[in-house]
Length: 71
Image 1 (cartoon, rainbow, N blue to C red):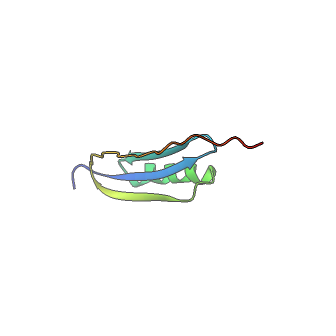
Image 2: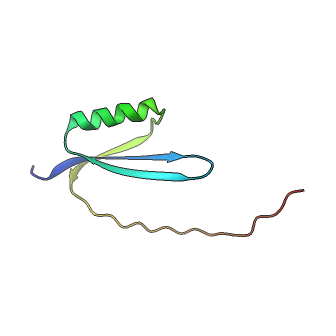
Image 3: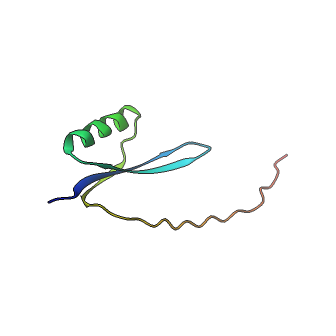
């Protein structure tokens, strides 16, 4: 089907930040290369979606409160 592609979705996290990535790929070869790079970074949890170009809306709620000082 025209316009179909693969979307690779993965998350990278550290103590300071969390990054969610959604990356499109046109063919299986480039997708496989990207997965190999993730495995080299020891990222083994990811999602692959095969379909047409998509749009996305991000809705995020964060509740902040004052941190208690520990003595």
